[in-house]
Length: 467
Image (tube, rainbow, N blue to C red; front, side, top):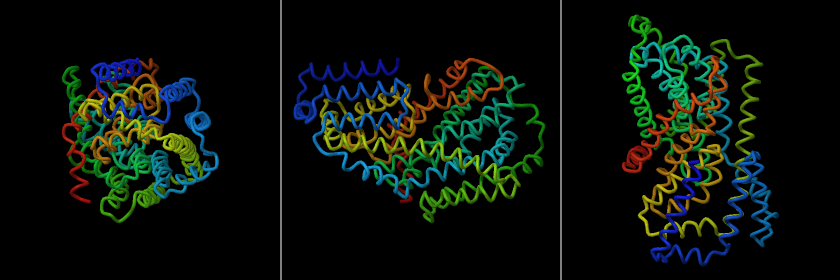
């Protein structure tokens, strides 16, 4: 429904511009297009049809590329398919993706996430809605080593949900806070979306990680404000057990935070200090997680095999999507479609911020039926030239697009994180509990993007200061 409303609104917007006699560059771009609009519309319909039909994203992109190539281009593009796939598959930056995934899988199976949650609960439990705050903070801390929203939600959900089985917390708010916390997995460095975005747009991944620090803090503070609001409204007081814990026990609990803190320092510290690239820091993180698992006597061949199998499955999915997107991008670029789209949108009689709001609305609508990573890989090659032509900073847009991916991850009815948490519930309940619980957090996430548009320095000051 959101997608349909958005498409209709954009149609009215552009039609209104035409009715008021707007010609300019937009009309000239449309008139001089080497590809007719009806052909582009057919490609778009095929694109939506493939995803609506449940075809695997990688396969859908590859088939769409072949259809567009044979139907719209007279060039022998098939002679370059191997080169197109070889280029991204041999990129050194992309190696960090399976490494970060493997690190998160090892942490999950080594029990480090449970120690993290238990220690944070001792400190956060005294606050109104204490366990809910623990959900957000523990997800945020775990995100700093996991790099994936799904991995963060699955890991912390498996640890946190047993704490709530006999508590007074509303299930909707519990699931909503876990979904919101899980969504931080890609935004807080070392998020995988930044790596993919940097690879496609040739933007520094290290600069993107620095730019994400301010927005990450902003989003966590907004999530905390939402929890405080509902805690006072529903009278969710602090946990009595946590209040009874003395300072001696609290200080002792900090030892459970040491393993995660060491990994964060190893991964992010080496990146920010300039001692290692994101790929090298990911390798250090994997080594560190294995050493910590060995120290806890959790490192076994079975655990390692399960971690590597799960990593290989996720990496293969991402790689197939990436290869299909590169193929499609090559076809569309050879037809001049990105340049044509950039000229058309920048030629409309609207300020740049209005066009940016249209792009943000497009992603919000797309996120209701499309997986976040697929959304980035398939659309960035088309929209990145538009954004840069409007004068927006590529690093700033990388942060915004990552935040939009996170919203897509928690957007009903197709948010991946929502179904992960629903599948992990021990107490039965409808999926609508998760949908209703995440909505307040999703709206404040959108508010954070608006704040970032008004105050772009929140994202850009740290890269400008340190690089």
